[in-house]
Length: 544
Image (cartoon, rainbow, N blue to C red; front, side, top):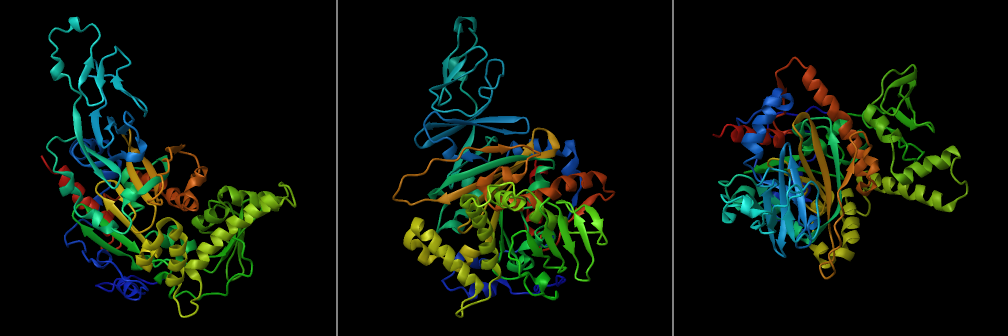
């Protein structure tokens, strides 16, 4: 592997500025911005920040009760009277569409004896009535009715309005802030919207929304998605087409940005002797890009691993040794090849085992389409240049034409970079919209008051023809804590990538409890976004 260099040339390989200079289309100003993290920000963070109930309580009081945070998407409550319950730890808020273009949020509690006004989301309510004794409020929060009001002579109806929390809108998302003295949202978010001028989030609809409880702290969870440093170990199957160590990181006030180039090989491969491609094009057999070992999935979902020196071993899908003279294998590679697949890939194995309807063209066609999809993704990232065009230019051209039926001539203005690269933002503390023409948005938050659990959500915000009707929003799809991400097929191939990521996370949380070290350590540059986050977090919790 190539060692990261010190100084400004942080890694071997192609710098991102060079890729922008070689783009086949004009590059917008926001991609050229350079704003590195200033010196003196934290590289050491106390372990207790991820494990301590005391620290969790500090975050609730000093952060979550004061900070702007994404509560929902406007698509979640499309009609007047629709409402959504937003819970965080033991806090609960009710976000209501009170008019066509007006939203309000209330503390989710009856002013009589404190019962939650709503436990679940709902539609087209005319008022908000407590199910305990019937106290009722209008959608705008004003008191509507107190049964037996004569028995409350001391209650002034004008003083019984539901307490509001501040509300703001950005990109179709609803943000709330429980602090009545909070800074204006416009000041907090800064110029984040200037990075989305070609395809603003307002012009997208919620195509998918998947949520899952993870057995790790919310910061452990989100930090796994704030850097590309983990790719070399966690996602080895994509190293041939991702320039992970050459990612660019910038910070801008309360948000930070990472740009990871795609269509360029990882610098980690520069010192690895590259073998000839395998003649078998099955998506269940691959050569490890770092070790050149061959990983071959067997019909019983074990993996036969053969090292370049001829040693071999049989392993489970999690990389546990079963037999053979090769004692270790990459668990992430085993999981990628032999772990639970998407539905069409499962059909492939049904056919191969002889359990499917042999000769059934429908099943075979499904299997081939899944294999072709994976092959095309890998080919786009690793194909040799043709006709003088780079891999990035070829990949961007294909995506440009794929989006043209939806976005029309707008695609003529989109540079290769915005179609190829992973451009991912973090708006403090937990909102992660992806830039360019990627659909992904993440949100992470505590699960109840357990510092060892969190909720991860992935949303897809997709464009739609602006001269057509806005498609209906996808409902949230909860998958169980022990469920595989492929239980959410709407995520496509990303579900399998998530399996690799979340394979690590519970083990990180357990390791944080087991470690003798008092601090975790972050790299100066490759973990810039995480360092920026902790600098902001320290600032928030130190405020009176």
